[in-house]
Amino acid sequence: MYRYPTSLVEGTFIKRYKRFLADMMLPNGQIVTAHTTNTGSLKSCLVPGAPVLLTPNDDPKRKTKFTWESIRIGNTWVGVNTSVPNKLIYNALKQKSIPGLEGFDRVRAEVKQGKSRLDILLENDVEKMWLEIKNVTYREGDAALFPDAPTARGLKHLEELIALRKQGFRAGMIFVVGRTDVQYFAPARHIDPGYARMLREALNAGVEIYPLLAHYDRQGARISGLLPFDI
Image (cartoon, rainbow, N blue to C red; front, side, top):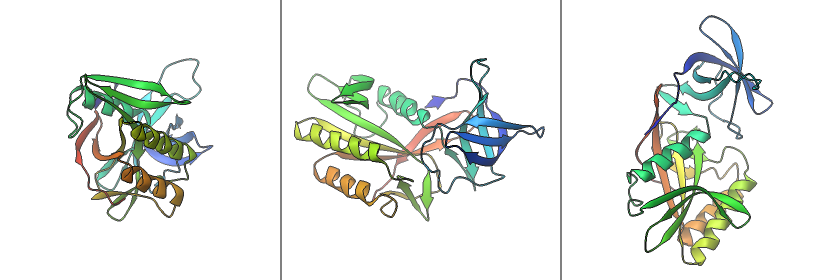
């Protein structure tokens, strides 16, 4: 479980622009600009007039006074803040509540590996396991798809996980599916065929795949189960 550190502000989505900015309307009619942490396209999420949840920020040095947390599409809140899945998964791993990953005593975040940092290192007295976490917001039909834009960084992470697996470590990809209107997870082959091929290669190399369904609301987010996947 992850809980927002402060009460959220409700609004409605107007438009996203300049990648990291989005205009929202508050209930009193005021237009505010919110910071958008998500670097993807947010394909299938940018619906004008849809309800949004924002975190207020009173730091005088910050230009934007809100961070965009989620948007309501149909009957589900979709988590768009890419920092939340990492915190959610870290908490779940500490609580040993993710099936298949309960056997580790130590959980470390943002651990350097090679020329970059991977999101999580799990350890016990016998083995280590490296994990990378991705936030999934894109939906087509019953499928949650990743990525929603070509991702060179995502390819690099898969290559690192494959290399770690070949060295004898456990390695895994966690896809946090931040919407509940889907039935399974798959790579978005039509958007980034190279990533789809590399994910299949990673699976064949022994990299473990964990698509986790996350339920978002006004208080925070929680893991509600594993999704089947079609890699």
